[in-house]
Image 1 (tube, chains in turn red, cyan, orange, blue):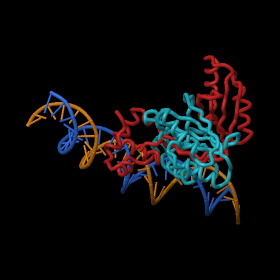
Image 2 (image 1 turned 30 degrees about the vertical axis):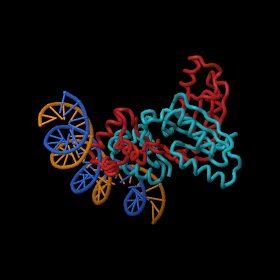
Image 3 (image 1 turned 45 degrees about the horizontal axis):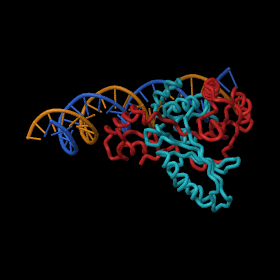
Image 4 (image 1 turned 60 degrees about the horizontal axis):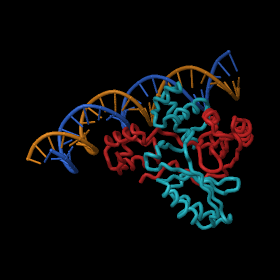
Length: 153
Length: 153
DNA sequence: TTGTTTGCGCGATAAATCGGCGTGCTGGTC
DNA sequence: GACCAGCACGCCGATTTATCGCGCAAACAA
């Protein structure tokens, strides 16, 4: 069943503040609290909303640096891929990893405490994962736009 | 004032579920509800926590495709940069944009309804922004890891 | 028309939040 | 060693919030 206008407006409200109360959402979307509560539960049960996260200031948590790192593997056997992806899962400083098209196989988003730490993550962890052939780093200088939102309306 | 162990555990709890009630957080971090509520408010006031967002299934919202797009500008005058960044802010399909080091100036994260839509965003919007010289697209094939979390513990 | 389905609002109840108050620990001073 | 101030905790009562059952109205099919 597709999302109707009310569902989309509920999601839009949550994208501004996911800790907003049901009553506040209800007022914004011109509905009473009961249907909002029920729709919210349905959106969660259907997997449209998979959870809720705080937006954090990475600098204030001690991670002022972040980079995108592109990685190439020597081969694409199951063993190499599984070992690589396992190592990625275990590394807490890798906050995202995508398999991508193009000249590189993976694009990682990595966060670090400082340059030395970033260097350590790259040189002592990532390049040493068996099967890794090539690593290219792109340092983030400035966040021009970070919208945690998808277009819903 | 630095974050102590309790603050970090509160943030860790919120990273799992930011709509968790104060009482639930309190139980997890072995504190009563009152100090948790006060610490939470302080973390928000201090800007450590800047807001709360739902985690959404982009596919179920009609955006099954996403890509990283790297962009080079012809020049780096204020006028060109301001116009480019303004256009990025106005484009709802650009969910993130960073100024970066390396051979390209910007790295964008873009989401789209389908290939035709992605093509339209790239060819009809991004390459037509005045001052844009070069555009390289990297399509995301698979999300290996997407942790909305920073390491806090 | 009649029966069925779907989704709304209302009201009640259990839970959560918020503010005030008292207590215990710690560090500094005399 | 005694005392005081500052800080952060827990408890408690008042208000707000979430959720559930119920009845009602609109949309649709037979």
